[in-house]
Image 1 (cartoon, chains in turn green, yellow):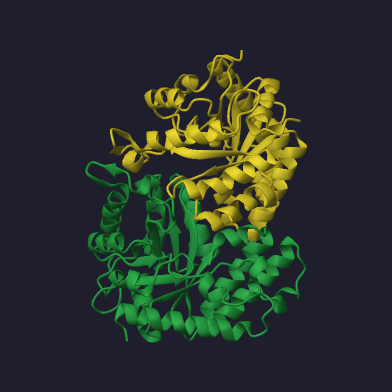
Image 2: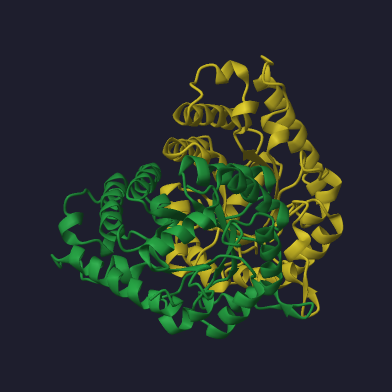
Length: 293
Length: 293
């Protein structure tokens, strides 16, 4: 297996023939009742239910998608048992052949960032982690160093998909929006460690909510793998994400969380079939958007 | 007890007569050998050692400082047992009458930010949490809402103390640096929920590494309580932080982590005495800087 994150990601995308990333955002109220009933409504009970649910989702999507993205917040919310659940889910996803992005959006000063990097890549064994650039270069470098050493990836927030994202990210500084300044840095970081596909192991989070911005950023983020959230529940469509891909259909994964995890009411019995159907549909839509099919 | 975070903080500052915040950043290699020897060098062993060490630090500083700041990264690094240790440390600090700031620097889109806010204030029971503003208003609001409801505080990163902080934070947008745009928003948020002291429950993280910037930001951040890192090991001095305080000596706390936790070599036996002496000195220096003594 290649030791370069983006080469491994691209191999997985080509094997599954889709750039779909399945978001693991477990929410107690939305879990299928048939599963939820088996667990106590306590922090530890919820954590066990999240581990069970996410493992079953991995089983269901393992043949249909190359990568999953675990949202750290929902595991942290249920305390120490939640972090144990997160470790179990990552290990199970790996056992099913799925890559795992840990969506943690961390960022801190250098010596603290080292601890966060070790947490992401060693303690939780994620293939890649999302980070926040606000603290600048020296807060990012510990992630880059450890990722390079271990063959992992880093996705830096550039332009996010939430309604208020533009408040600071779109402020114009020295003639261009802040997020383009971040994009320039990310491109430089990505260029320091390219894989066989030409892409670096440093990626960018770029929301799917504005087609114009995605097109512009794809051009700026040369050889930078993209993680595109905002598809599905947040309003982005397959057409909106077309610009994220290169001519081979590579260079980006597109995340869908709620649309795949919860396309059913909690009381529905056939929730597993609903997840498979939603995953197949999203995988196909995105394969077409990427030009993989 | 007042239900407003900053009123509780100010009462604690006045009771202890110092604005010192003791940073709980446990690092395995730096722990006193006498304590470290009692624990296995495994994730769970380290987590237990961190809980033991931080509880003992709380015992030692409880009469000398109003507040401690727990750095989430070091607890996360040692896995699920680390998060259990963090919960124990927060509970122990509270039992000793200390307020607790959770230094987590979280930031995510709205529904995920809600989970992070519940994690900080409910799961870990922190009195305040640090957050990152890069994702904009809707990523901050879930923290503000829950903090207001529960009488807790939020510190938004404005200008951090690390060497690379200026890379993005100092970019000039529409005539002023990015961090001043963030400062304006923080001032507005703080104004929405003032306590008896006139300060809001929304604060700002402003590094102690530039006296000029701290002075400017103190002026801009009207009625915003400050959390000032970078004092001690990161190079800031008592003179550098003078500008953070109002005429009553209130409005800011100044964090010192390594200078208080580790003012000894690991093999030194009298490490507890060293912590007490370092805390007394920092408490006195900062009381003078604030004009409390």
